[in-house]
Image 1 (cartoon, chains in turn yellow, orange):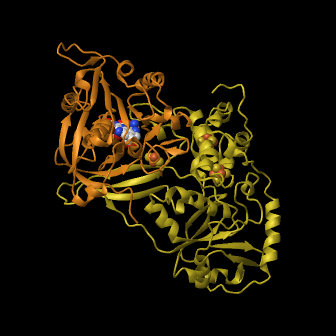
Image 2 (image 1 turned 90 degrees about the horizontal axis):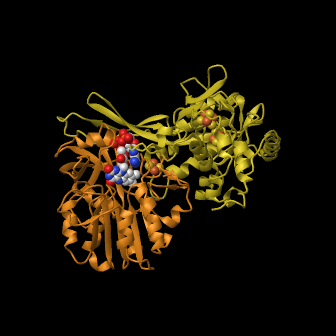
Image 3 (image 1 turned 135 degrees about the vertical axis):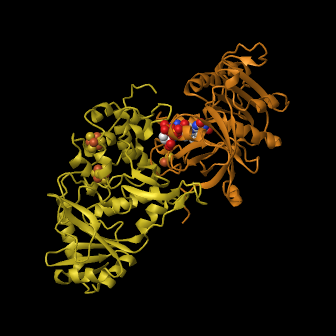
Length: 354
Length: 279
Ligand SMILES: Cc1cc2nc3c(=O)[nH]c(=O)nc-3n(C[C@H](O)[C@H](O)[C@H](O)COP(=O)(O)OP(=O)(O)OC[C@H]3O[C@@H](n4cnc5c(N)ncnc54)[C@H](O)[C@@H]3O)c2cc1C
Ligand code: SF4
Ligand code: SF4
Ligand code: FES
């Protein structure tokens, strides 16, 4: 493990050097009590005092609205009615201060967008253009975080190129990939921190002990899909849900989208926009039939996707990194930890007829 | 990186009104760039996204057969935004098609086997593709039986072809209508499940049934096939969930862990039995 020590006095100067080779992104204070991931203007630096953002940084790679193609409906134009690709910005970018859970989430979502059969050029281009400089959490961001039992953790480095650890007077930069090393080189950060391993380890232990909540996921893969689907608890779980979609929009591991043509005069763009399984229109057929026509269907879909379908499809953990956003932001306090434990512990009644 | 969302530009070459209510039209497309036709190499049972520029895309089963060259055909029901606009388009208009998408009927499994095709209403599009394909490769299949029903004679798709197939002795046709006051109607009268009960061959290991139709038809046909002894892995169906991307990415068409657009739309009844009933 290679670790570099960055004293806080050289921090901003180093980032300024990086601006020549990278577009910089990072958490910036927004409103009273929130942060958002934005491009950093010249002279602007990431706010390293932030805990985490309400909205996840997924929009860096998967914007809420994004043009896919442009077209022209003017019959005089030789190209009329033909979709033209819109060039995607592939220049090098670096996001500074992303949290481990949010970086890990990109890897889960990558399985959807970067497959052996199809690659989504918009998502993949944006993803590959980013170098991710992560920022370890010295303590739980909130009482609802359960990252350590959701396959992630406050010092987790999956999906990162560099992991920064705040020791007070300096940052310890754990080099995870060559891409990360290159970024540090461009910044001119090079002081080796030979004794760092034990310091990181003790900070990590301390941080992990502050993650107060957890979920059980060990039995999810052995549950029978149709039995879980028919479990009696969905009615109760979904009862208070207002299908607002906040949980899916704020979630770093939710990716669903819609495609729409937007025309102004004779010009237009084919757009993609975030969508949500919580909305009735999501699955409504032209005929009026809707396979997920009720709230129970939709709430069940969200949890079954994250905690059963994904588990079965990829055989590698749940589609959740335990950031706790959906729990904090849900207006009616629906709690994925509780649902996960109910699903994990469910035993179908043996008297049930198939 | 190839862009799987980019439609191939096509020109509408022909439009045929199929049914007496004028709600179904068959569109024949030719590719603007001939090389795209080869890239669009497809199998019966697959679908494509028809892209009407400025309106959007709709998933439609491919009604032409891979054995027919130089064009592709789709039969479209007038339902909502995109399909209604398409119904008003003219010969010569430019639009796009994206695909082929989905898994197709299992032609490797069906090779050398008897195939019973059971269709109802306008869900006969990919079944037409399949029949034309099997007839073009007749030596590859055993007995071919077709049971196809619509409300009235005027609602049957591809009427001229149906009549031509009726005359052949290498395909067993059973056309039916729910009812008719045409005194010259010389085919069956009765619902598809009833005709299936009378005409479908007894099940055996070498006989597969493909069913496409409205949910109500499927609901009443399935017990008939059960009674005739069809194993659930010998009953093949095609699902239609709302779609956008068609390539397993936008997340809306799933039934359990499977995406209808990418893992389907074709599933055996045995597979469907293990999946939530979200279709
Ligand atoms: C695999 C597959 C094969 C199909 N084959 C045929 C066919 O051969 N002929 C035919 O007439 N119809 C077919 N359909 C149904 C057809 O896709 C819908 O009728 C059509 O999308 C309605 O679009 P609209 O814009 O007119 O309606 P609107 O209600 O205005 O729909 C808006 C959008 O919702 C989506 N949508 C709505 N209904 C459906 C639906 N049932 N399935 C998928 N997406 C939907 C589309 O993206 C559509 O653009 C098929 C559907 C699927 C999934
Ligand atoms: S945030 Fe809560 S109320 Fe809103 S859709 Fe999600 S579960 Fe339902
Ligand atoms: S499901 Fe909730 S806790 Fe899990 S990653 Fe999404 S927002 Fe975070
Ligand atoms: S249509 Fe997008 S996932 Fe199937």
